[in-house]
Length: 127
Image (cartoon, rainbow, N blue to C red; front, side):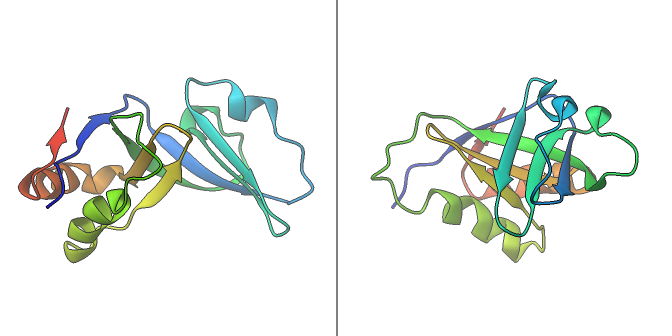
């Protein structure tokens, strides 16, 4: 049996943006308190505070972010599965960002209250 996880709701509303793979990382993306950028041969994907996103940028708006209390040991297994599985069972899509220390679980703002209830019902703590 796994120990329950503790998650904290970040205060900002986020956007998930897609730019051309050759695009430079825009200054506006890194201007907030939270951002993540991933470059692949197909895209430059940026998650940032949505109020910073410039008009005309392809993005999905209105995401809220739950931070898993960390740091998490690299030997841990099933962390994301413990969170994603109950949300999938409730038909709540997620977008995940992993860092060296922890994981961040993004859900649409319109589904945030239900997502928190689902996670709490699964035994996790949401602050």
